[in-house]
Structure formats: structure tokens, C-alpha cells
Image (cartoon, rainbow, N blue to C red):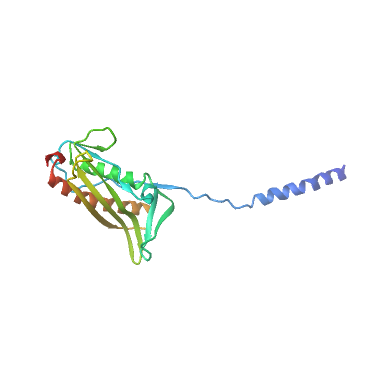
Amino acid sequence: AAVTRALRHAALLPLLCVLAACSFIPTISVPQDHYYRLPDPTPPRVYAHPPLGGALGVAALRGIGLYQEQAIAFVDARSPLELHQYNYRFWVEPPTHLVQDYLVAYLAKAHAASKVMRLRPGEGAAASISGDIEHFERVTGNGRDEAVVTLTLEYGPPDQFRARRLDKRYSARAPISGRSMEAVAQAFGAALNQAAGRFLADIAALGPAAGH
């Protein structure tokens, strides 16, 4: 019986060694994706009477492939012609839609028109806004750390065959005050707030798109 027990114990030894080895395998942490939205716009002026009149539609902006993806883009100032994307750090929407939503919120909050909405096919609007994203990236290195936004924005009748009343380029930069990606998102919001403010001042001076 003693011999039998010894044989059983010997047979269990390899299994115990395997279990012991497994208990020392390090746990591998898988990187998590992080998603960021822009802060709410803060227009410096809220109009008592909407300068742009009736319904105003904002179309999704156009942009190069990089700005149609959610990954946050950045540029090293030492090699300014090369764009990079962060791993695991994303916008909640691609910048082409992110900026569209920001402009809708900004113009609605400023009471720029009686109704401000995302422009979709078949929806009626007295005027429309469209445009292109030329820059929407963080620039870092060489003593710089800032959000850079450049938009070309168009304003006019919704009919694409009628002349636009405005077609202008707007650039803005905002310093990033902190090392977190939330600070980066705050800086992008500040830069967009500047650009949207200048754009609204220009189109408010023109008045309703149909008034020309």
C-alpha cells in the first residue's frame, strides 16, 4: 500500500509542477481604447435677434482620409510634413463630423438663426454651411504644444448652383495646458471656438443668404 501511495504521489508531481509554473505567468494588460469629445462651445456673443434669419443647415465637412478617421492626429514640429496618429486615443466621431456638430452647437448657442441643424439630403434650409478641414492636429516639439485648426468655410443658399456669399479660410491655435489627452481635447475646443467666432462675425454681417 505504501508503494502504491508513493507511485500515485510521483504521478502527480508533473501536474503540480505545471500548475505551479502557471501561477507565476505574468498577467498581460491589454491597452484600452480611449475616446474624447470636444467641450461645449462658448460664443462670446449671443444675438437677441438671429442675424441669419430662418433655418440654417451645416453639412459634414470634407477632409483628407486622415480627418475621416477617429484616431487623434499629431505632428512633430521637427518634421512638419509628416502626420501621425495616436494609438488607442480617438475622437468620438471623425473630425469631419466632429466639427460639423461643433458648428451646429456654436451657432445654435449664439442664436445665429432661428433653427440650426445638421444638413441632410432632402431637408429644407434657408441657408447652408459647408467646407473643408485643412488642419486638425496637435503640434508638439521644438518648444511647441498646441492644437491647430484650419477650416475653409462656405456660406450661402442651399442650392449648390447659386453663388456662395462667403468662402473663407479660418485658422486658429490654442496652447495645450497639461499632459493629459483631456487637456488636448480642451485645446481643440478653444481653437474651434476662435475660428467659429470669426466665421459667425463674418456671416452675421452679410445677413440671410437669400438677401443678396
